[in-house]
Every structure is written in C-alpha cells, then in structure tokens.
Length: 204
Image 1 (tube, one colour):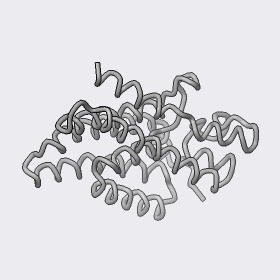
Image 2 (cartoon, helix red, strand yellow):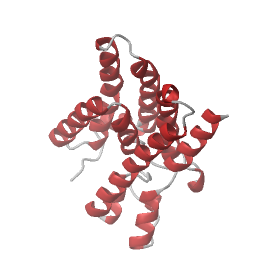
Image 3 (cartoon, one colour):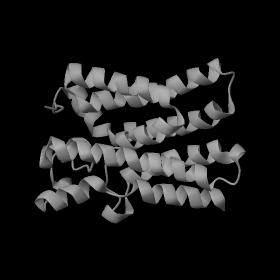
Image 4 (tube, helix red, strand yellow):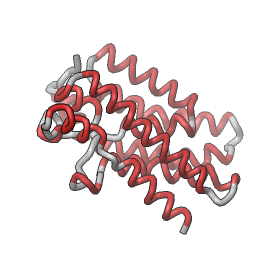
C-alpha cells in the first residue's frame, strides 16, 4: 500500500492550484477565463502580471520538489527511495494538470515537472532548462520552449543511464520522464496546432 499512498499524496501536492489562488487573491478574477484557460505561470502572467507569474512558477516547481522529497522520506528503505520518487514525479504532474479542486482543469505541467526532476536528475534538468530559455528567448514562444525542454529531458536521462551502465536510478527515472513528456505534449496539443498554423501567441 505504500506506493499507493505516495502516489496519492504526490497527486494532492501537485493539485494545489497556486496560479488560480494567487490570481483570485490579487484581482478576484478566475485565471481560467483568461487566454489559454490554464492555471500555469504563463497564463497567470497575462492576467496578473509577470511578478505573480514568476511566483506561480516557483510555487508550482516547489510542489514538484516537495512531492519527490516526501516520496523519498516515506520509502520503506533506501533501496526503494528512487522507485517511490519516480512514481511521485508523474503523479504530481497529473495533479497539476488535472486538479480535483478545479474540476480537473489545471495547467500544462512544465514547472511542476521541472521541480520534480530537478531533484531526481539535476544535470538533465539544467540542460533542458537551458534549451527552454534559448528557444523561448529566440522565438518568444513559451509553448515551443516547453515542448523542446520536455522532449529533451527523457533523452538526456537515457544518455545518463547508458553512460552509467543502465544504473538503477536511470532505469526508474526514464519511464517516469517519458510519462511526463507524453502528458506535457498532450496538454500542449492546442499550442501545437497553433504553432503549425502560425497563430500561436508570443510572450512579452
């Protein structure tokens, strides 16, 4: 039952709708009625300003960090800590994207995924975050930067696994990262359509 408990707690942590709560607090508005309708940092910035957007980004990343650290703490043994943490990461991501408190309508998961994997695969996350910044800065498309970062992360984890001789850590992390990538791509499906059509909104 321990894995079920860890997944449930990670989901609940991930489902805390910080963006929604901050916009309500600042303006009394519902961020889901703005732009993409998401509760993530980009949409929050459009509704409540870049400062609140940055705070949302940090809090959303923080709940991913918290979910993974909690999973490690609750693992029955040190040998199972990586397996439990690898379950918690996508569970927190699902919570952010489909929060029970908001009718399962949340954000797109990038910041929460970043926080989760920053604990599990920090080097891969640094490289993926660098790619995000490069693509987002050069194109002004946050969605494109997010998709590139989410796509490269499992590749980097796979490379780390090969380099380390298919270590236990990479063996657990790679399926988790692939699951996160699939969910983030799914959440960006409308952005992908608009990018193809040339109608995606630029940021800034």
